[in-house]
View 1 (cartoon, rainbow, N blue to C red):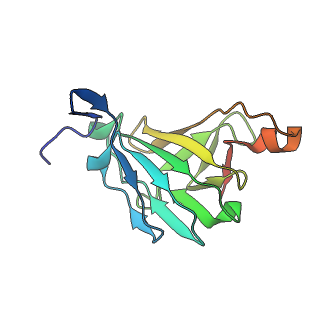
View 2: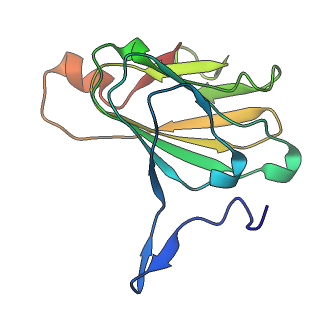
Length: 147
């Protein structure tokens, strides 16, 4: 690998920019070399994106996903199944839950950052939006749930 995986962004035309990559709607594994990338996930019928296997040498590897509005919240899955002992942690239903798969909590556009904080733990930081909607819609906006 030519670059350190935690180096994010690039300079082009004299401006610092984040790397943004549009994902295909086919199942695919995300390589650790793409750390720092913001992935745009288009509308799909079903797609699963695999986070890479991590180790203590790769702490801080980070990916962000912007999931476009979907027909069903179960259409997009992000998991860490490449490592059977790994888990995604966030505050789902208790203080900390461990899960191998997460999905958007609604069909609304959703954002989340996945960061490797140990050799077996990914932390999901959900995005926060401030749209003016009904309370039911607002509660699920940018949220994630278990898959």
